[in-house]
Structures are given as structure tokens and as C-alpha cells.
Amino acid sequence: MDAKAPITQDVLTIPRKAPEGPQNLIGLSREQMREVLIVAGTAEKQAKMRAGQIWQWIYHWGTRDFDQMTNLSKDYRAMLAETFVIELPEVVTRQISDDGTRKYLVRIAGGHEVEVVYIPETDRGTLCISSQVGCTLTCSFCHTGTQKLVRNLTAAEIVGQIMVARDDLGEWPVPGAPRDETRLLSNIVLMGMGEPLYNFENVRDAMKIAMDPEGISLSRRRITLSTSGVVPEIARTAEEIGCQLAISFHATTDEVRDRLVPINKRWPLADLLDALRAYPKVSNSERITFEYVMLDGVNDSDADAHRLIKLIDGIPAKINLIPFNEWPGAPYKRSSNNRIRAFADIIYRAGYASPIRKPRGEDIMAACGQLKSATERARKSKAQIAQEAGL
Ligand code: SAH
Ligand code: SF4
Image 1 (tube, rainbow, N blue to C red):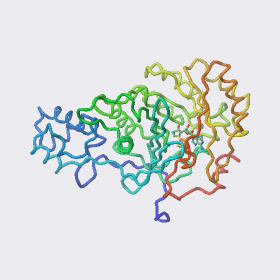
Image 2: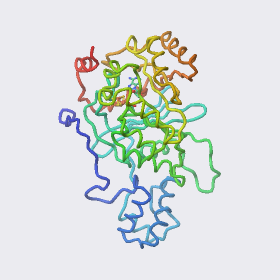
Image 3: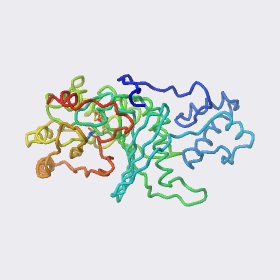
Image 4: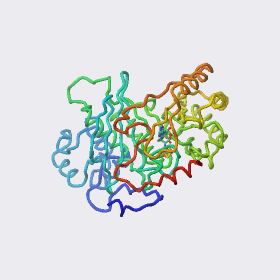
């Protein structure tokens, strides 16, 4: 199968409506749902109310069967069942790490697979979701970036990842039971496979569904979108999503960042920092998270730490140091613990919180930057990876 898999850097987006077969209600906005209900014969006057009812069944109660939507008439339910489906991506495998991290391999249309990771912590549970199959960008330290096959996920496939995780965690409310305020799945990070800002509309629509108060109801403060720095889309994220922003910063000079995060050649540090300065005000969000992967001898010197502080001066920020997660064939090594501590110390003394991200789920290859579809073996050669890393 793999030998025949198309090798392409083109990003395809599957149209929302499959050319044949019943339409999936998942992933539609409230307005789109209203429209499809009208097309299916619902009276215009009633369509908004019906959409609201169906919305609650799907996104609040987690219902997948039209027959259980008991505040709708039998005939109406039958019409829905004939015309529509409520369809989530299929979970192919689930692995549970010694530390409780769960990794799901999820299959989407076309037989593609993406990975979703659930990370339980004492005060929260974070779901790391994917926005693309693979990634068109080629950050030289990232495993996903070595995957050649790329396709954008639809809004349904993005919000579907949250829903299958809630299924697995048994987290849909039960009618009549008191509301459980301590959620197992309390936070979302768009830090799985793919560059979310290269799939802006679908990511935005999916996050709007996740934030809707009559459904999954996650606050925009509990959603963090991580980008490698697609500068023109950063302002749009502030305006149209308003979630928290994380930036894959990783270097303090254009020369090094060009090598680590090649999108830097298009939008260099100065442009990126301008966009980041404007973000908190427009989105009314708190601090921006600066992600910084610690690569031995590449970006981890004291001088880097001092430059980093200087560059982000004036931006409400927290810095997240990520010990490099190695993968087979990776052209870098993780900085030593002493080096990471020394770097963190400089940042801390400058007044920033500088947590060192604890790698989670390493035994199941679930750590940041390790995600890559196991079925997609159209890998670049080691030589190619090394060449792109400028080694
Ligand atoms: N494409 C987006 C989001 C996905 S990557 C982005 O780049 O921001 C999520 C985070 O993991 C990013 O900060 C990314 O730079 C980091 N990352 C990628 N590969 C890694 C690795 N091997 N070790 C540690 N962090 C890695
Ligand atoms: Fe893509 Fe992010 Fe990996 Fe870069 S770090 S290749 S942008 S997933």
C-alpha cells in the first residue's frame, strides 16, 4: 500500500459534503446546520430551533443516534436518520503509557491516519490534537516534518478528535446527573501533527464548535494553538478564534531559525515579533507561550538565553523549554540536563516563568514532535534530513 501512496506536498482539503451519501452533521457551524436542515425540508421558521436542539444532543450529550433525540418528533427523527449521519473518525489503536498518557491512532477519510494524545495531569487533562496529516513545513528537528504525504483535516475531523477522546474517557454527561465541573479533558492544544495556520478555516470552525457554550463548552482560555510562525494568519487567529497562542520560536537568530524552522526565511524574526506583539491586545488573551526546543550545541548557549530575553522584551510571555524528543534518524541531540537548567535559570532570573516541559508518553512515542503516522513510510532519507538541517 505504501509503495503506491501518492507522494505529494500539495495540501488537499476534502469538501465538507461528500459527493454521495448522507451528509455528516459533525463539523458544521450552527448556521450551516440550520441551512442543511432547511434543504432537508425543515420549515425555515423552525430551522434555528431544530438546529439548536440537534446541536445540544450531539455536542452536549454526545448522542450519535437520531432516535435518542427525544424532544424531536418520531417522523422528524426518521427524516434526519435518512438524510444525515453523525460520524466521527475511527479509532484504530489506543496505547496507554506507564505515565497515563494515551495515544490514539485515528483513521479519517481516504484511509489517512493522524495521532491524538491525551495527557492527564493533577489539575487538568490536555488533549493534543492534529490539524493536518503530516505537515508541508520541514522543521529539521520534527518527525512530522519528515512525512511527505499531507492533507488538511476537515472541521469534522478536527472536532471529531475531541469527541472520540471524550468517548474513551467516558466524559459525556448523563441526563439527570449533576454537572461535573472537574473535567478529565479540560484543555486542548493544537500541537499534534500539522501547521494549524495552514488550515485556518477548518481549525477555526472546529474550535468554534469546541467553544460553543451549549456543547463541548471549552473556554478559549483553555485552547492553545501552536504555530511555527505563519505571520499573516496570526492576526486572524486573534480576531477570529481568540484562543491562547504558542509560538515555536526555537532560535534567537535568523541564521539558526532559518535552519530549524524554515518558514523563518519567509517571515523572519522581526516580522514574527511584530505580529506577536499585537496578539494579546487583539485577542484579549493572556501570555504568549514561547516554545523552545533544546538542541545540544545548536540553540542552547547562555548567549541564546540572553538574546531570547531581549527579543521578547515587552511581550507578555511564558517560555516553555522542551527537551528535544529524539526520533530514529534525527539529526540533533537533546541538550544535557545541566545545560537546560542553566538556560532556564537565566530566563528565570529575567523574571519569566520557564517551565521545562516534562516529556510524557515517551514509551509510546507520544511526545511532542514524535507524532507521525506509522502507516506513512514515504520517509525522507537520513541524508535528506541532514541536508535540510544544514549539517
Ligand atoms: N506545527 C505547529 C504545531 C505542532 S508541533 C508548530 O510547529 O508549532 C508542536 C510543538 O512541538 C512545536 O513547538 C514543535 O516545534 C515541537 N516539536 C517538534 N518536534 C519536536 C521534537 N522532536 N522534540 C521536541 N519538540 C518538538
Ligand atoms: Fe510542521 Fe510544526 Fe513539525 Fe514544523 S514543528 S514540521 S510546523 S508540525
